[in-house]
Length: 310
Image (tube, rainbow, N blue to C red; front, side, top):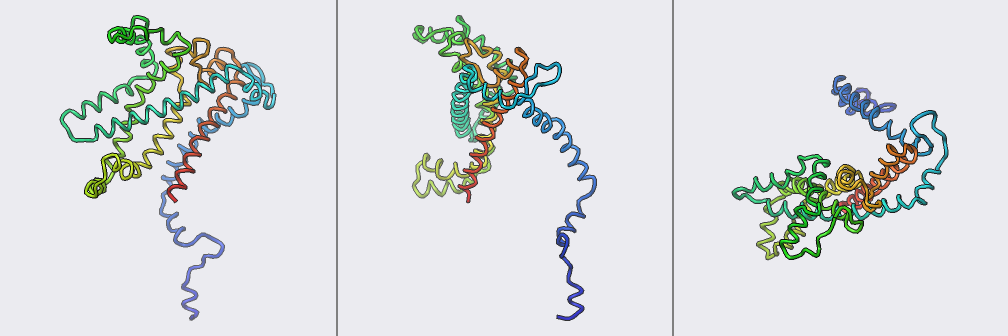
C-alpha cells in the first residue's frame, strides 16, 4: 500500500467514525433545542416528582412542618393493613375483569365492524361515544341507572327477573362488579378503535390465501390475523394495565370505595390517606406499590413478546 493511499484513509482512532460525525453535524442546533426543552419539562414535572414520591414514602408527613424519616415502616404497615389488602384484592379483580372484558369486547366489535357497509361509521361512532365523556360524568350516569328504581332494576322486572333486583351500589357483594360494568362500557370503544386501526393494516391477501387453502374463518383469524396484530396487542395490553391501576374517578363518583371498602381500589385508598387523613408518606407508599405493579406487568409482557419475536 502506498503512502498516498495510507494518508487518504480516514483516521478513526480516538474518536467516532467519520460517518457518524457527518450524521451528527447534519443535525441543526435548533433540533437539539426542541428536544432539550420537552426533556427538561418532562424531568421537572414528571421524573422529579416521582423521585420525591419515592423519598416521601420513607417518611411520615402530614403536609406541614418537616417530614420525619421512618425508613420502610410505611411499607411494613401496608401489609398489615386490612383495608390495603382488601384494596389490593379488588385491584386484582378489577385488572382481570377490566382487561378481559374490554379487550374481548373491543376486539369482537372491531372484527364485526371492519367491513364496508352502509351505516357502519354510525355504529363505530356510537360505540366510541362514551370515551368522549369524562369518567366522573360516566359514573354519575351509571349511578342513576343503578338506583333502586333505575333502569337496571326496571329492566329486570320487565324481563320477569325481579328477584335479581338489588341495590347494586349499596350491596358489598355487587358494588365492585357494578362499577366494573360501567368502566368496561366506557373502555370497550377505545379498544375497538385501536384494533380497527390494526385490522386496517393487515394484509388481506393472506386471509384470501388461507380461505383458498380451506381454512375456516376461526382458523384464519387466530393463525393469520392475530399474528399481524402483535404490535396492537402490546399497546392494548399496556394501556389496559395502566388504566386499570390508575382508575379512580368512576369508582369515587359511584361508591367512594364503599360500602365497607368493598369497592376500594389502591387509587381511592391512596387518595383517602393523602387528602382525608393527611398521611402523605403512607399514601406515597401506596403510589409506589401501584407503580411497581404496573411496571412489573408491562415489563413481563414486553420481555415475553420480544422472546416470541426472536
